[in-house]
Image 1 (cartoon, rainbow, N blue to C red):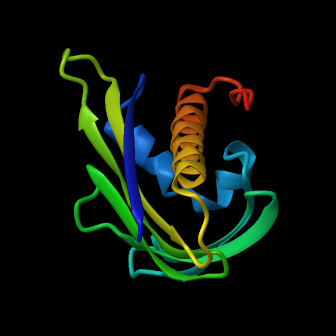
Image 2 (cartoon, helix red, strand yellow; image 1 turned 180 degrees about the horizontal axis):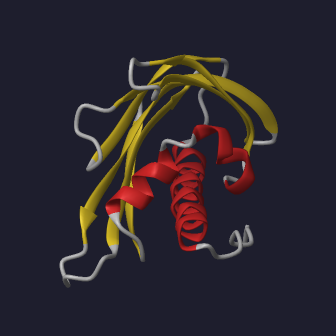
Length: 155
């Protein structure tokens, strides 16, 4: 059964800048620490990646998976679903981008993630891993968009 988690962060940049960073998949290995390789497998007529293959470090090993991206609610939402993967059975999620309520040019970014793996692991281990994935993804995205150094992993 999949576990679902979400977390939010404020990024001092416009929705457009945040979204542009999120869809620049080729640059992910430069700023997303667990990602080792990224390859665009398919693109749409506008040149946006619709299927992307990732090789990542996960739970002490390397994993490869493909995600299909949905741009129907862009730039306010970028969602994805798992196409194939050697470790995940489900890896569906979304970035939801909304303007900051204080009227600034900042963006509130929420990361939603549902994960299920092909082999069972204790729930508390899975929840800890999900929390780390989300926290890391958001802090590294914030650093990239705001032009700050990548955060140091505290675990």
